[in-house]
Image 1: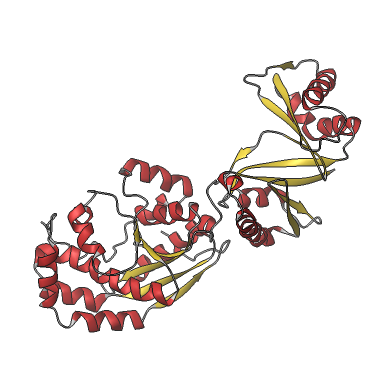
Image 2 (image 1 turned 180 degrees about the vertical axis):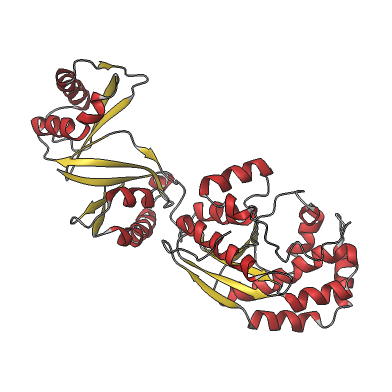
Length: 399
């Protein structure tokens, strides 16, 4: 029996003349992921993507899990392929799903006939196949509203496909169809979720992290690398850029008003991120800010931060509360790593009472009194370390 994986499009199916571009990007992503799970053939037909194992090296279970994390796929199913002959369809359904049917009490059959040359119509296929399966499993009864198993038959151009329910997948749009951005990855809960959210909208991304040794440790850097690796299951392979930020941060601490330290530091980080983003031809920056979550995330502080550089700053979590963010972090597998107690540069030198409603004029005045900051930022930007993050690899990190 030949088994394949069928991947179904979501909102991508509604695209117009550029739909083929989205499909091409999705198939490229599928081929890249599947190369880690044996030999596969990927092709498309009738708004569905097919992943077909070519030999015994193909790990269907692992491939199915990997494909479920690819944005652009809204549902997946494992299906048995057979000839477009009703008797063969019945035999295939029993061979493929018979064991499952023996362990349940209710079922229904749903048929879709995309190939209109097939002599039986969809309702007839459903009725006759249901009768055949009832004959094989007399303990079953049909429940069209809430069945324990939905047996699905699709009659398509290339054959007939028999499968159980379609399993929900990642949804969204294929990564790379909506431009490229640089995500500011701090090591906390929010920034990995921000990366996930923007990748779901088709944004390809890399990460930038600010380290301040000796105030931050090598373990803290490895933690961030581990987070980038976890999120890569959804975002795809990427680069992690680590900025040596000790000198600019110490300079701001020693020369700026204490109450403005946080906003001044974030503006400094944005300027360095802007330099790296443009080197990578990124079109935007991404942050994990949520409105009013902390002092630097008020409307006034955000306005001051935005004014520091000229790229759009995308904030996918801006209207989410912490519980919603944590729920997503748990779902993508980053939460347990995010909460490990490693320091990051955003938590050191933090003033006890930061100003929550800063004005841009006072921020600019404070920066005018720090003439050496620009040179330190330029030096940090020149010394950035690049770490390659590849899907499927493991990071040597024990929290």
